[in-house]
Length: 188
Image (tube, rainbow, N blue to C red; front, side, top):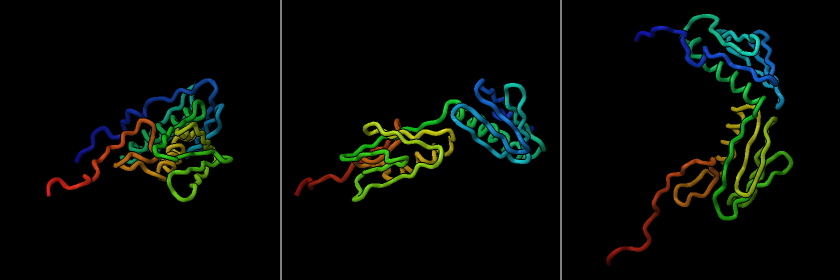
């Protein structure tokens, strides 16, 4: 199997524009991005070089190899997510379906009552905030991966079941419903 043109990443070669309120600094392999919502750091792979020029961040391959071209686009995407996170932030919304399902914010943690005999508490890691409005739960933060991870942990407390559709799901998530057992016999 031949790989032609190793090192050409369509995502990796795009520059990342910095909004006016965001600053970035590179020290060795560590990229630090500061903005109005906070500060994030990322350590890039030694095969990838990250530079800040004027109002853009440029990622490039330091040494040509197959693994370097694979990491190039990933590094660029991670740094772009940091820039967006410190300027706008990320949020995921979940909704609860079920009779008596409730959620409350206690301090920084989320307390869920979703059909178990006891409430379930989901701890908020540093940089994550919860908000509850009726049956909707919002997970907010500046780190995209952490927001997604915490939202997945909240959903895992009571995954949506396919027969009645009860559980916690992402807003807009479609749960495929199954037909249950048919009650009563037809014919004698």
